[in-house]
Length: 380
Length: 192
Image 1 (cartoon, rainbow over the protein chains, first blue to last red):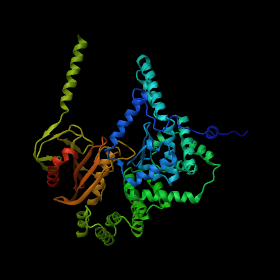
Image 2 (spheres, helix red, strand yellow):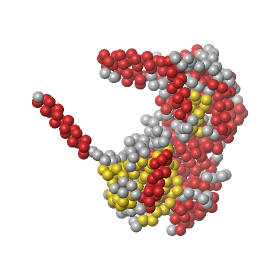
Image 3 (spheres, one colour):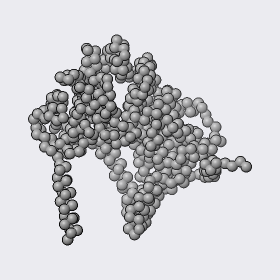
Image 4 (cartoon, rainbow over the protein chains, first blue to last red):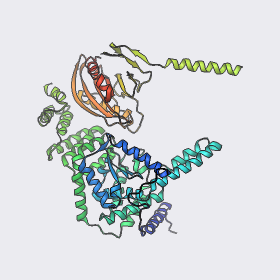
């Protein structure tokens, strides 16, 4: 007799549950402009987030570029025009993949997310998901559950368990629960579909992230978003099924990709420089392959490919790095650093070529702060 | 009574032992520690703790506000600092490094010994001529985990196949501005 594996049955059940839930229309649980009474527990929670938000005004890791902020705010407003005036968006300069939304309307988008989405539709699907959590007041519900759970746990701790119960409770409530995540997913799809974005973007992003995760050599370093969200395979299957009846317009998708690349490109060099510091070489390779396909500036993509290989420094990496530095400098608008790094790497094998590259670096960047170091090699 | 005597003896022993672990005053002037010498205009307090077997840590106003890290005599194949995160180990000092590569080694060692959390940027890389050969000096900057901007200066050089490094850092607000001239003088007087 043919039997399905347990995991497949679970996936089918989850997909069925989603398809049933998917047919319903989600609505916000509060009106636009809602402010809780400051004497309530919710008012206290908002106060804490307001204080946190005040701290962001001088935070060094907030990107305040008007163009980038406007671009992300416009997507948010397109997704939910009624609540848009009450949402404040902050671009956090952090190379990890994450986005979050507080109950008071403070939204965080980490730069690691910008490097991972392939088009505006994928970005809108993440923002839509976070809006789903916000509009259904999931954070407040979760906070109340933690608070109530901890009160009970502390009572048990005092009587019986010596701290174990509260530890267990805190661990169990560290993220949204499964039904809240599903609701946020479906609400997100609802918002993005209404705004004209493709529902297919919602699972495509997770597929790319799964590919990236598989290339990561250290399985312990799961991204924060993964750590607080349900199993990725389950999510992909469910979202894919939900989007299966909607055709996708390839022309619109190409435009959506072009808009994203155009907006992020001015920040690409800085964002990738910080991403490289994470030393997730497997992930970086997957990311750069994606950026190459997407059409980020070729000279920069090749430069970072070479930098990744130089830093990883496995057998043969430096030879391949030379190839990518050369591709970088033969592409349009190469970064000056490509000449310098190619020069440095060639110093041990081809001094004539190395000195030529270092000279070119100084010609392009005569006032470089490391010119004394480069001149040292040129003079030696 | 016997229990009380035992308790008092144990407490006394703990007190004596904790007395052993204390900061040591390093006077201003010419300082010579584990093969590194330099001159400083103000005194330092040497910490009883370190971040690796080849390191000496000092501060003037508290480790969170300013630090002097000396790395002395790291042989090939060994790392400058301990690795708290096995996924991103502190890179070992390897044979055949050219002077400019020391900057990257120091930078990634600092990042990795802090669990990969710091985004350190370096600037003003320049060669430094020492009796032992050519070393490098550079400036560094990062925000610590509390969001405080930290600025600093470093010098690294190799002697007899061993790595020597000095890293000076201080909170930009107040401390770096007050100490930067002394930091520069310390880097310029660095000898191994």
